[in-house]
Image (cartoon, rainbow, N blue to C red; front, side):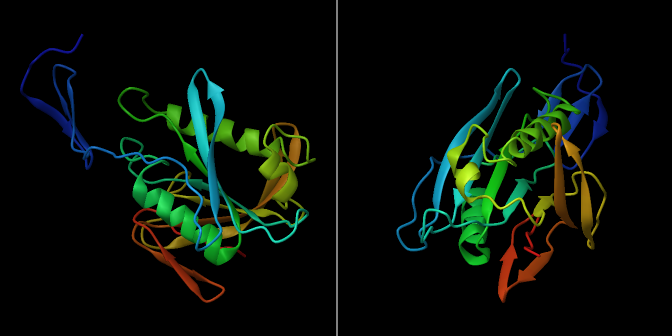
Length: 217
């Protein structure tokens, strides 16, 4: 049980840890907004539950569909915040993913993972991996979500975007083709990691968000 010892043991960008075990978070209150359909861009969004224990969910963004068999690349997005703040449901990440879906013409799956300190590392990695396995379950068109079954194109490899999730990208970027077995499915991915505050441009459209930017190859 944490004590009230005022002596600081460690201080990080997003929180401070005291010698008694108490954790003080610097993060602002994170507002969460509901899903919505954008009448201007035609982008629709909805929330899905991936796991109830531990709690893992995602917000899916579907671009304007002009015919029932239309396919789009899929962007798997993990929001920023040092794994201790923010949310896939916050206004800034909702708007960012909606804009990327509209401008780049991609289905976006934005993961809502567990945050420190209520769910310490490696929970964020495990939750994101569970979400990736859930997405991979739609490769053959028989997954639990009909938007992904009907409109996600897995045939050429989908782009995955991380906020320095697996590698420390700094102010640069790491990209390339990767592939492997995910949830028993062979999945190809175009992997791009962009450092904090970077800007990515694709198809003449610039997408910028503090933490990560998306490129559709």
